[in-house]
Length: 174
Image 1 (tube, rainbow, N blue to C red):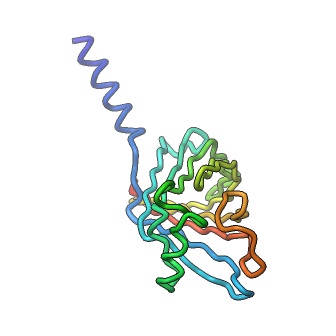
Image 2: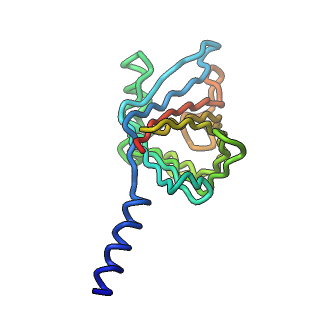
């Protein structure tokens, strides 16, 4: 009987901290090319949130983007971006973002430290995040900038900017 109580307790604990996948998610980006702002997004993305009783300091947030699903509105450019001089999706199919820490700065606002991996480079990025909750879901939004060259994406260019703005939004069921 004692073993049954312990087992039920463990199962209950696991259910509380179980992974919650995003029901809707988007990752967009913006970069200047020849002085013109180019917008794009990725079509295949997954994200998970582990959150127990709104304790953000012990929560984790992670996501992965399938780099070959990049879309900029120009198919020829998209095809070029998956080649080895940009994302090299044959060798590096995923872009990953994994939280190291999340800290609630005030209600509805977090600061997160994340490991961002693009190609073979992982860098620590700090991301301001907002979240809103209703009875059924949690909406998480953030944006940050990176230098594409630090991740080996594209080479030196006189027309393509180095800084890329990345915006994400995910809705997680409660």
